[in-house]
Image (cartoon, rainbow, N blue to C red):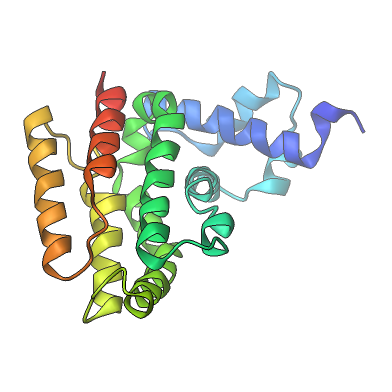
Length: 213
């Protein structure tokens, strides 16, 4: 089997071509047959495509999963020697780096990544909250944080960082985004979750500017 025909390469090609079609014509307008026809130009048969995905909803799910997986590689953070507060800050900075790395994709495919399907997928496949909760509990234990209710605090922080501050979901001006960051910092400090510092605020604004430029 040639390198170009391996299952991994085939799946990658299906996702890349489908994402291009979804972004150009809209998810609802694209039919599975459109994807099949386009992929035929790359030597992929209808059977090969349906072997990997039964419909376009499965393809979109895989596209969203592929994007989100890059933001969920938390092994190094979880097993570091940092205190709870620093681990949470590391997660936030990693998420911002992930957005910056994929800024071209996000800009070109904003209709896909800002869709209700994308929000639902992000919430349904959220494995960040339990990790944030455990780090908050670590912070309470090591004295770097003082949060009375770790679980709701973790959910609040997840929503703020992964949805509320995401320009795909809430397009803002520079001033509006700056005000949001200040509000989030005050809100977190108010519940003993002092994880939004000047470094994160500056980094978030920098990534936001790169995304909208």
